[in-house]
Every structure is written in structure tokens, then in C-alpha cells.
Image (cartoon, rainbow over all chains, first blue to last red; front, side):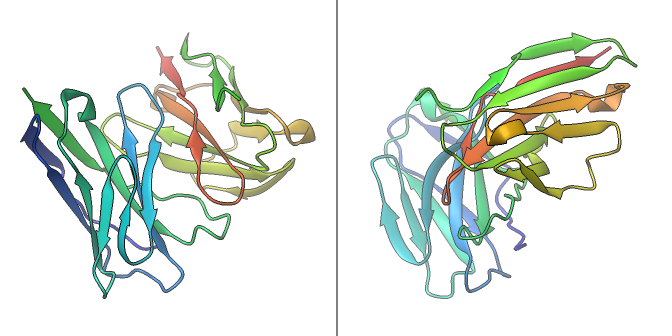
Length: 111
Length: 111
């Protein structure tokens, strides 16, 4: 299972764009990159998933360079309610393999 | 469909007692996972079911832990002779083939 490294914490202000970068140097050919969001006392919630280049949904964008050794989650115009822990995971989503979470990035959005 | 449901949400028990948690996955999701999460850490995989078959167990799952998924529907996780180190959030997730949906977890406190 590919190991991921992401910052422990980040602070931002309301209305700003937030970019959280994750490194995954040992990513395998079949691996996808998935980001989850977790609020206190709740289970992780799927945000976005991608394999290469750029993926965008109504919540976030995911940028993946050609070598796929890193990825960046971009949250546009964050609000206080985006304060949460964000996890980057790498794995073969086509298999039944379990998810391997790191410690995540605590994002704190300030007023 | 109300998502993955876990009961109880909170459980306080005395050391040495047995506890059982229940997870009701999203209907027709054939994969069900149990994770454990301690404060400040990401969730750690415990075990995985494909329908009623338990296909994988983590080394974290000591012989005091047992999980079942009769008839491939809901699942139970039992911890016997609880220890203070068992205090954690126990998360259940279900999955069709791609993507995971987590429940809100059961927070266990062993006193």
C-alpha cells in the first residue's frame, strides 16, 4: 500500500482558496488518489477521486501531475464549515483492498 | 436510503465487560468494513466482509474481537473482556464496488 505524506495542519481565512498537497512517491499503476473529509465525531466522507490530470466536482478540485507522485486538493472559497481533517489515500479502488489512512491534515478556517 | 447506520453512538463500559456494536450498511452494498480510530489518528482497518464471508482481518483484531455479518446484511462487532486500550471510535463502512460510505461510528469508552 502506497504511503502518503501530508501537512499536519493548515490555517486559512473564510473566502480563500485552500490547497492541500499530498505526496505519494510509491504510487502504483493501478492506484487512484482519493480524498476524504472528516468532522469530529463523524465518519470520513468522500470528497473526490482521480487518477491523473485534473478532476473537479461541486465541492473540490484535484490536481495530479504527470508523474502522479503527488496530488493537490483544492477547496475554493472555504467557509468556517470546511474546518475538518482531510485525508489523502492511495489505492486500487477496483479491488476490495481496505483503505489506509494517514494522520490527515487538520484544516482550520478562521473568520 | 439513510446511509450507513451504527448503534449505539456512544458506549461506556467497565473494564472486563463485553460490548457489541451494530452496523447497518447501505442496502445491497456487498462489502462491509470495520475500522477503529483513536484520537488524533486516522482510521485503522480491522476487518472486511464480502456479503456474509469475512475475508480479511487485521492483526489489530485480537482474539477478544469478533465480527459477524449473518445473511450478508447488518454486521456486529463484539469485544470481549474490554480493556482501557479498546477506547476508540469504531467505524463501519460499506461499499458496492467503488467508493466507501462511512457511518458516524460508535464511540467506546472503557473505564
